[in-house]
Length: 115
Image 1 (cartoon, one colour):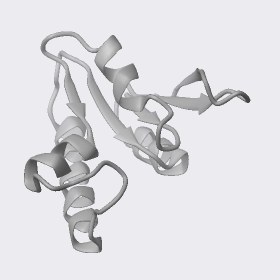
Image 2: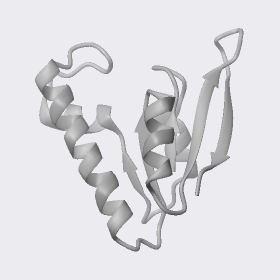
Image 3: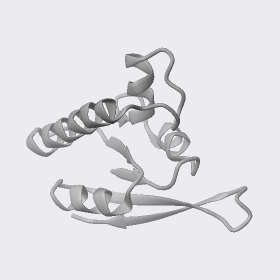
Image 4: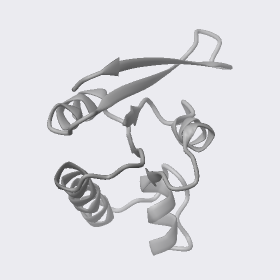
């Protein structure tokens, strides 16, 4: 499953609430924080770090496509177009887009089954 939406829309919380013990969650911010203890969410990622993280995410997606996993994998992506593009190449895939409501206080989840 690909989970997309703007920064602060609740993507990480959504994945944590829906994932079970053996599921995989790719959270770029969590990986960035492991690589740099001074990392601040959405603030100070260098272009080089962004390229590395994007490459690792793409490698994970390729592995998910190639290996028959029995658990779910949640891949957090900001860009809905990229999420849909990757989902079209991934078996048993869906995209859940999180959108902030008009008040900015809540989030709406819209899910679409791709394959």
